[in-house]
Picture 1 (cartoon, helix red, strand yellow):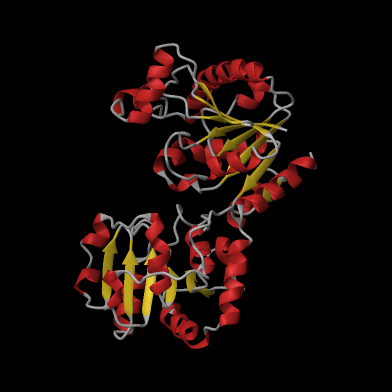
Picture 2 (tube, one colour; picture 1 turned 30 degrees about the vertical axis):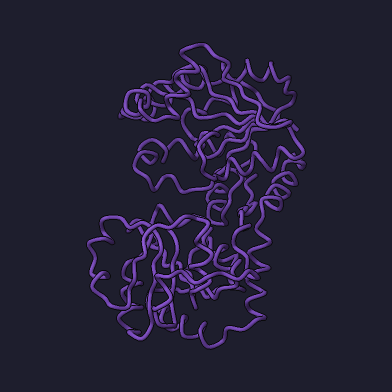
Length: 392
């Protein structure tokens, strides 16, 4: 099959992992894939002109250079050539959507030329969660199949909610298929399109090896056990500061270790005055397994709100791949882990569940966790996706 991947994408040259890049790589093992970098808009060119990735894109299109690059035998990266209008300032959604036609038309014009160059036939458009500039792509390009992929609850973010509360349901409804990486988001899509499916989340867990031996980081060597640990961004929009405080103050003989960058709320919080709470800062991703290996129990103290409620908890797979007992906040997205993690219905459940995890940990439970994490591969995710596609 021929796939065109568009949406809210990481530029291909940006050295960061993303769902869309991983999906493109996995698909390209058996299919031809065109990965389309985000079109430039006027506001981005003005505000981020010193960003090296914006510079590269702008130079390609301003110098009329070829903006199609071959990544591998079956995979191409493309930088759209036409600049789009910045429209989100428009207050009226109906007018905003009508003007989105202009961006969609320009986008479709660029893509049409590349589709012809690559001789893509009966192609499938895979739209990664972009609801505005791609709204009319299906109408202009008439693909064999148009897929809307939901991987984040974007309506929790003011920029997307402004017009998206009205537009995203319409976009999901007009898609031939809606796919989602969490049960919550699949159920959300199903409200507007009966052909909505949960396909799981792929994870690259290659560095998280339960069987490996890790050197304990110097910062942890002198911290007394049990160590209750968290690895990831420490931001108040996503992490429930009350849960961490509750654990620390109710169990002063436990040590809580937090590895990751803090936002201002956490930096100024009273947690820094608790002797059994340790902020170790941001670490290179390659060092994270060594820190996790030193934890006795891992936690994902998620704050449940509009932004987080549907998110797939990727860090839980990283913990489980290391065989670690893990406590998570209950959401619809965490239900798939219920046989291998401890699920907290409310913040007060955390201390009790951590005690339970410390008491009953064993090799059999560790193996169950590892097997659960290892089942969440990109290969399995794409198998689920292509199985759905073949039905249409």
